[in-house]
Image (tube, rainbow, N blue to C red):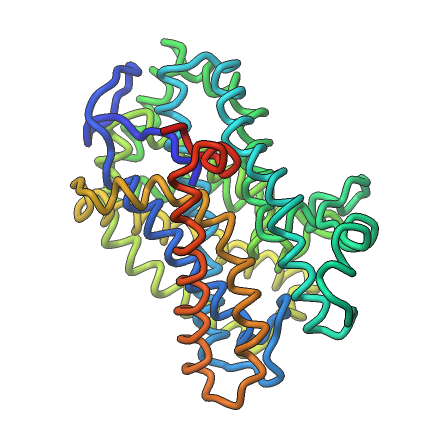
Length: 400
């Protein structure tokens, strides 16, 4: 998502040298963006609450939503953590933070001021909280009542406070980058690289890569009420767990033995992912999320949830390395547009869903119309955004 260059040979660069680009990582970034787009297009028909909801939730869409929630945002943070490794091979921590601030905070603030007002307006009109025109709502009511960024701190602020609706990912990716930059540079010291190499050697055995799931399990189970609850307000996961994914991804990129281990374990990870996803869906079907109030069920389910996420991340990294290590014009175009596409995508979906969800059509027909309508709107907007340097800057893209 961050669009930082992913450079190395397929065996990694433990010494921090520059080499061939990891095209498979760029492809995963693009494909993950496609998944999150389709995922959000289906959210109006899911049992769990969203900004615009159909009156009759669809069980199939709900099950698919649960499955995708188990790995899509961890994958985003994993891709970003790996890209961070290569970015820090060419930059000091200060240069890295400055580049991240420019690339992430500029579009975040721009979206808060210009794009999200449209999102909030259509949401509140659809749900009957407002009946005036957009210009009756913006700017006064938007900034006084509907501004989607909570500035006050409370014990539960980090459990699901509103930091830009769906743009929370950009905000927290920047925060993670700020707090880890010097730590990552410290990891690059010779003595620490030796320690990482020893850890990589242990993980470079059949099943060894799953040992790295242990910190995920510990953190996800430890983050409990009232500070964190499940499902949380951040894509179904908890912020500390995302931070662990981010750090683990940096470590995975730092030694070629980790990549070898991913290759060895991609098939077992895939099988385990299928098993754990099935158990999660059966769990929700049998008990619902209310059962998580019980401490024993909370620990059991949270452990299963975190391990499931790690299995799918390893699966996707492994098969991505095998199948997507190539470059072409489509990749160069789409990789450049991932960040502006992300910034626009949910607001475009909300606009389309506003008009399409109330129609008396089958769920799958309305879903496909939302996909086509919102994608068309985004594609039209991306044409001038890509060509004009001022808009490229506002959307976090490099100048032409």
